[in-house]
Amino acid sequence: MRQFFGSSQRGDLAEAIRGLRTPQFIMLLSNNAQFESHVSALEGLFPGVPSIGCIGMSYDTRIIEKGVSVVAFYDGVSAAANVLEQVSTMPVKYIQRLERDIAQAGGGSRDTLCIDFCTGNDACLLTTVNTVLKKRGIPLVGGTGGEGRVSANGRVYQDAAVYAIVRNLGGRVKTYKENIYRQMGDYRFIASNTDRARYIIGSLNGRPAKQVYQSILHVSDQQILTQTFQNPFGKVDGEDTCIISIKEVSGNALACFRQVNDSDVLTLLELADYQSVVQNTIQQICRDFPKRSAVFSVNCLFRYKLFTQRNYMQTYLQQMSALGSHVGVVGYGEHYNSRFVNQSMTCAVFE
Image (tube, rainbow, N blue to C red; front, side, top):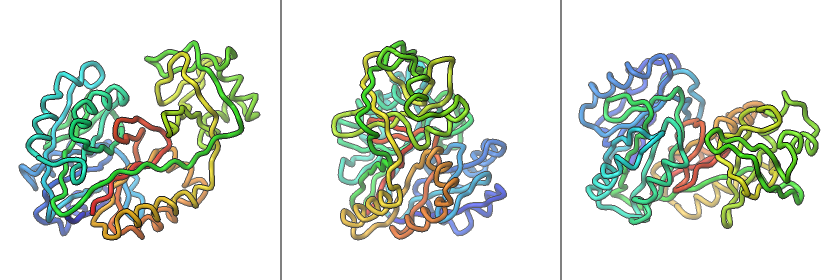
């Protein structure tokens, strides 16, 4: 298979698709003002080609912040795209669509991938989708788009998750997750007074969550929202650690981007040597895939902000380009198989 990436910083779709011929699957990454018109125009230009889209920044060797980008797979791909509606309340209602698309693709864990973009309720969505994907061992990479809208096959949806089942007819596909944080000290917290619906942590070890965070890191209320770039919480999940980003201060509580439940055991994380972590990821992918046809990634908005503040974002994209055709989207939450993660990079590598 091959991967196409075209973009326009000024939102010109004609410029973004220049050179694109006979795509077999398309992803649209657009801006808030032009999203609907881009979705409609793209369907008119490539009618019947499976497609999904969301609102967000994108990249190859540079960032497209407010324009439009088109990612397409061709020359050796079989794909189907669809939507799960009412994702905030009952995504399971539409799960037969995913079951049919997987059956039609006919692939498995070695050569098939699910890519998704959603508008929210990520953890519930992934639990629902995983009930189908795990039967075939099919991995998933995706994330949350912006402004509460996504698209599939030329139509725009709200309160929905759009997905594509992509089968690589020329080789393998594998997913990866990159964590640039490590445990800080021996801190262990038992969460309580949580609000699952609002993702709020009320108390840690019986003390107000905000005060616990501030007493360790010596930051003001205003600094908490940027300190999370360096010191998010972590939740141990088997041999892995799920990163939990702080969204806002809510009185003496902390609202997060990921759900925390009463009695969850949390740790405090600190920023590691992220440049070494990136190099290790690149080296691992090269070991696993000596020949790569495409890499599609989702980078968290907080990683983008951190890398930009440290003048590393452009260097990062150049380093990732050593893998070959590397493109992706900046998400508001990242999906990795059955997990909803924060402040991470997830990617799919195609042989």
